[in-house]
Length: 343
Image 1 (tube, rainbow, N blue to C red):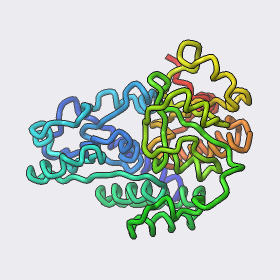
Image 2: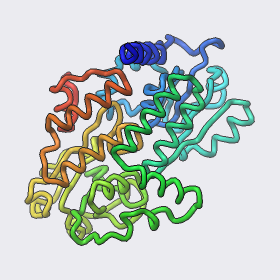
Image 3: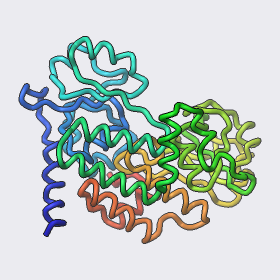
């Protein structure tokens, strides 16, 4: 009885947040203006009413597959909305990515509530969800955040989360204090995460990518810090990766894009080239599907086929519990293969 009621409540909350007006929000319909690409799925999970959002339109086709209503949502352009437009929308609050931090004072001077989010680890992800739920301040949002925290904790482990929270509070060099920082990495597979093949860019340390690589039992083949670093193929050969993961928008691994010598990389020789799954957001980046990403990478490192009934069942539980979505096994298999919806 309670479970059925909770499902109805989740469905009503999600439908409410997707009741999008044809034009701007009226004074009585104040919605969130979300200028951070990664945060929209949190809005959906928490039942937030969204007035406008930044969306990777060409990179998250499954988002529109599950939520066709979002096609009518006003989009936030690159660089964010101008202040006059924001004022006219009368938002409940504005979500900013750290790259837009300079807009904080402008919004404050305009008396528009704002919050800036950024994180590099799972503890930061949970803090972001918790803060978002508190901003919504509804029973539904707070319950969703608590349940999500419980779900992630079971996968990541309470001990790690506590250590990451402590490191952040004390403002230390966080990576030095994590449990995997002192482990022997000689036996761990080297994973290269390629964000783009042309030009060639990769994801390094002190990123959420580095976090899930390490937690899954691997080590990052990239030694520099930060996302989307330029890399030469000579450096790729030197890094000698055991596993290569292509981001959703990285491009195709094919002749003309990669040099002939790439065929002799250990990862390619062993058949360990993968396309990263993308669901309603990019699994490998800063969204709420990160626990699924961790489970997927663990399967790869364990030399298992990640497209298994067990993995699909975990995905079903996740999407039903937090989004009231019911994807078929065929759709889940497509997502795991990094495929797009059939046109």
